[in-house]
Length: 343
Image (cartoon, rainbow, N blue to C red; front, side, top):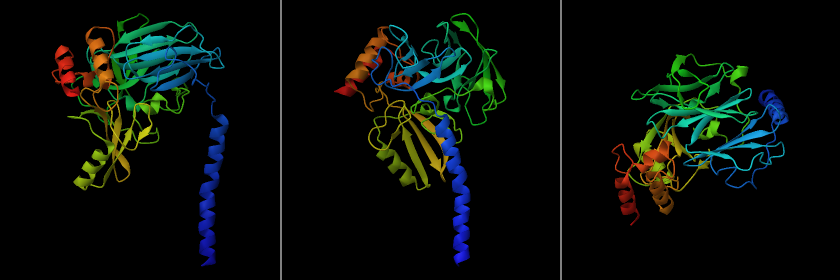
């Protein structure tokens, strides 16, 4: 009996020691990011954010909230290397750096169902955007870029269904602002390829925040789920429990933080797992909730009012939440419907 216990201890040590070594190696190589807690909204937004190393030293900080993205160059100590960050009227969903070029992409507000891809020269500080044809994109599977100016995303033509078998599409970036770039399906690139290196990121990096899960989980296509009204995490769990299929649900905020209770806001990602493995993933849309608060409110009303008056931009889940009557258009009829919901 003693020998069996000794063997079990030895086996545990054999597994534990390599894990400890790997942990120390990871910690030794971990990058220390600047403290941005004192930066104002002109430089950083409250949602997703990522750091990217500038080849000449310093950083580029990319951040977003429910309606816009801010790009800010930083000095080595985290001090802004500009008077104000560059504010862009869309929500970036994925980013990748290659050499001096930082690429980031998200859903375009116009033309409908297209993607906007930006390229930022981290040394030259030039910013150029390209527009794709109408597509559906699975941002949860990441974004890659290479030295030839190819940007790789998992997309299918709009109207087709994304699946785990959907291939990457290589979009050749055009060195002309507002140019239309077309894509070609390619095989999934190797994650170890140096030209497709992952960006330096904070704990709330968009590479994991877009999907709401760690990169160790198998890729599962994220589909939009439009709820009829406000919903809570507890209600989602109860619904699954009543179906008695042995499924569980994990809800993540747009910044990747787990939501364990309370309201599910627009932009939250909930993953349904079966037998411990992710089975399907959805991005929540709550009609009238444009800010991710979980229910229509005054902030959503003001944002919708400004959007209709061309004073604000909406994209992604927030834009779909603004279409309260679900007729494919966002206009004054939706604003009236939102006011009615708030009474």
